[in-house]
Length: 240
Image 1: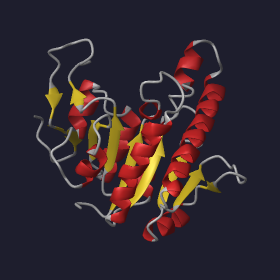
Image 2: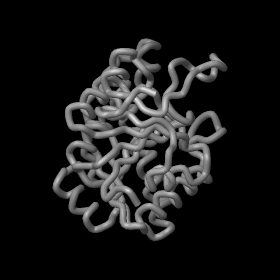
Image 3: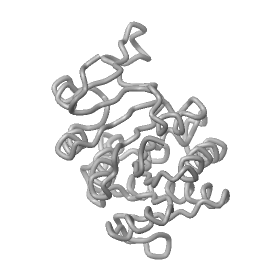
Image 4: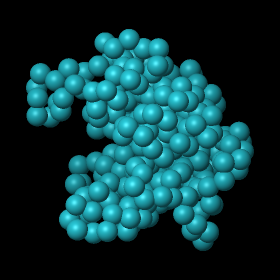
């Protein structure tokens, strides 16, 4: 394996598979097995999971709901996903802890940086739920923040597409996929990697981002092994 400590960012939509809404237990079990393979190889693994398969704060806000309230509901959705993933991991005997940025002491630990690092050092998977605990911030920003706090070497962002494109590949068949990008190029061209706050955090802390598809079985393990997979965003990269 190429890394010792990593952070995996999972979109909520990745957990619903083809259902269109909610959680597909088979998809979650497959993701858990891939994470288990990585953990058994000795890589310390943290996870940030989104909640878009259950509730989207931005969408609700656009429909008239108070933005802060909508974002808090979205944070609760991420905890539901985190607990689901925890259950799938522990069913295959992978010790896992969920830490939340909003206190839910009956369900999970509060987020404490030093405790999270200690869990990782003991080879436990740590899943961060409830975003950053603040409205107006995405789970992408949470991933960048937690990666910096726990000294992760890289962020792996698993999505439904196989990298970063110069336009939407679903609407433009001629869209170009990048192999590598700089943080500055992503920010200047507003490419859909992560939101600008997350990219800026990664740039300031020199944390590379690997964007790859979760739809192909085995991609999580391949990415962690350093395979040429998806798009890599980093400060010293060439744009190609």
